[in-house]
Length: 297
Length: 192
Image (tube, rainbow over all chains, first blue to last red; front, side):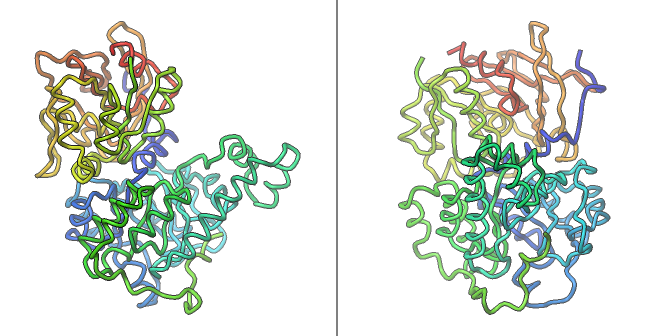
């Protein structure tokens, strides 16, 4: 009865399903196979393979692009957990390359220099699933309308400062609550104001959550940061510069993994935070020349 | 029948709780040894098996869960959960450990990476069909004599066993919790 004709790859369920499997976990930015092993050893649920962590992209300037395929393949060979990689906003050819490499998730990311200032990638056209950043509910639903299977609140990558992550996460969850409490007449105007697809707004109003998992990124650099964003509604945590720019990356990686799982148990957060060494130095966001979160729309 | 726990360290815990709730079964999240003491059966959810194995150690659950399995607690492992229960795991980490409660050999990511993840109908022993969702799924390569095959996936190289049982220990290489079909959970709950 079941045969190869009825086997389907790339379905929405299968693409969103991998994001479901990552819930509760930590996804770590890594720039080489050694860091990828550290991440896997510490209990990361996935790694994001990239050439420079956001803090270095911010420091170095220049155009930030998709990573060298060789480096991605070396990381794929080094670990058994899923490997994600970033494509520039709108750069569907980079995404095609990443799909051909067999990466498990493509991040259409504002951390890289955008390739298209009007259009994001048509993500429905791909078998590989996509994660996209969002600063508010309208942006999240536009990305989901384009086929994103996982949303991460953007925060401000490479700063070590959690304030923007909190702003974006609170913006998304507050607007979801607003949709839930709106009466049916109001939802059309809300969809218009959000510039979001009406069916997705109606779905959010009905279910009280996004149609895909909501994770948090951008500025998380301590176990308490991870606990904070998880308590604010993030279902998992992306940590970029926060691990390998800290004083003791191995301990920090372990500690943030523990903190994400036991996010609502302060005694665990206290234990893993004790004697951890310095977190990354960090930046006050008002001192930044470039706000990465403003890329994408 | 008492309460069914869902190991809630990482993974698709919510879907298992929702499926159990849809069947009218009392369920609870398990993240600590104390919470494990309070349940009569356990679901090991989908997720990343290396991350869940790591968190079992750091949460102090590895030993207590092993003791409960030895004492015959019923358990259903899906995907990562199956890997944790399997006697032999191929293509895992060099230091990958498991409970060995199910006499099967599985290959991690045995159907390929995420781009090869798939949906397909599965055939139960009685000839009926359930929907199968396979995400970077382990592939069951061999089963010991005491393992009963409850469902198979027929394909070019198949059929592969995808739902197996050895006494109180159940394992699925797919994700019954991701579909609206409650058959697998119902069969497990009815066995309690």
